[in-house]
Length: 208
Length: 102
Image (cartoon, rainbow over all chains, first blue to last red; front, side):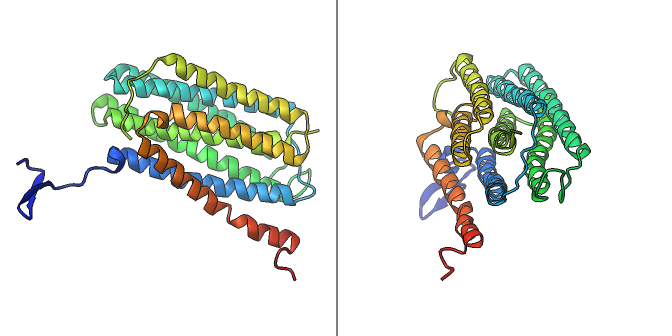
């Protein structure tokens, strides 16, 4: 009888139930968090879609320069996702140096994405866009734009902080390969959300 | 969500990466054709959904998890999305005063 077993009704049974779906507890928690986060983003995007479709003078302000900038941001974020896959694979293979190296590359790409994102915001603010008004049409545009893209930026910044802490902790032996994998799951989720933000927020509002 | 398959080559991930970038390029091309509102929305949602499914299955590794995990994730996510969309009925009521205006 192992230490983790207890005697119940004359039978030896494990003291703890096996994890549901044979998933490590932390990974299951991350998946459940992602599902709940889908709810947050879906709520934001549905609210945005409702406002966009129900407002007659909805602005379509995005010029080609903005779209090019968004394409560059997309390229950087999708590339960072691919690099994060490499980090997770290296961590699973026990290649600690490789996992940390790829995590740091992901981190750099994420920082560049965040800087470009903030630059994009600054450009919008310079054109007179606020939460309540803008030069082109309904004031709801600014609120919707900053809410949806702000949620994305908030997640990117949270992901960067988590990635920095976990990869440094993994290097020092404090965190395991599973923690790198969980961090990778969150980073991939950010990329997937961006796949919806780009067409719905930017491309549907391209200037004619 | 333990991995049940042997780790596969990097080429698969590179293919997904290129596909995701390609999807974004197609979205830009469609956006600059300025189709009607509904057609634009459906095209964008469809392409974004394809990109998201590729990301979830391969980059997040759901495709290589055990079957019950995939089913659980899909059911939970669909339930979440269905719940969110419950609000649309009330939105249409506010917009058009229907179907409860009379």
